[in-house]
Image (cartoon, rainbow, N blue to C red; front, side, top):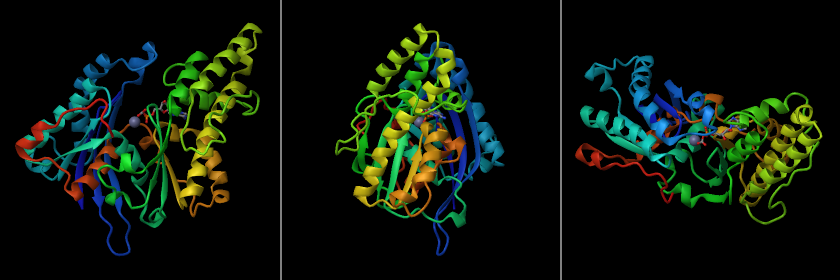
Length: 369
Ligand code: KG4
Ligand code: ZN
């Protein structure tokens, strides 16, 4: 069993978490137990600007990083000021790429200082690797392992990527984000498509959740015909930029006839359906062609109720051996528990920095993988 502290500050969530990693033993699957999770979300701070302001994000991370780390430690029964108690942590994992560089640097600096002072290994984690393993957090032992190959979709505000995973997460190679990728968005990410179209309709940032909520007020998903890009093409890639233009035109027409407010639920349901259709059609195509036996959707958009609902009613038809796997709601959006989990697997594989070497770790805004 390993105890890992995770730190995440790549965008607008300042988060720290303690997880316990129980490696598989005979008859018991791998378990990553979230012992504590403390997150300060800056969403309210950035709302008036309609998006995340990097400079403001860094300053707020600086203020909240120590309180979040202390809270995560305390909630896990670790005394922050007591070196012996904090010494029970085996390693410190931190998101160092990709993200807003000033925001990343706050978490990276805090993690470096702590690891160096405590003489503990430091584990650099790719933010997407955190999302990828979020589905394994707090799984019950009786839920068992996911049958392989696993089709993994990372669907967030910055990415829409499809991966085919042929091994369990503790064996994923360092470059799996590059090696296992089979499809991605050629322009906007799915979350970005939700946010940009929501902004056109006057909803606050981040808009995905508002589209989801408004569609639930009796919205008809077939009310408006909106484009689905690359439908018949033999590709697992996505394209969402055309949707924004179509929504802008539709909204303009409704506005000039004075119908926009009344038709908002219908329009939101139609936007949501266009994005969900695009995601599911490529997920099913990839799953069929790669013989995938399970499917997991992670990232902010995995919180979408229509995406969950449709996949939950359609998975059997598409040859999966078990129902679709989604992270628990708190692990869909950015959080440090997923970073600690990815760090736990890397720690086991020996991908760590120690002693003065750990001082070389830097934040990388746009790494190659
Ligand atoms: O993973 P995440 O927290 O941050 C990134 O790494 O991007 O994802 C944020 C994205 C935003 O675009 C947000 O609008 C979207 O997830 N999102 C949703 C829902 N909840 C969050 N999109 C659709 N429906 C939701 N319920
Ligand atoms: Zn994220």
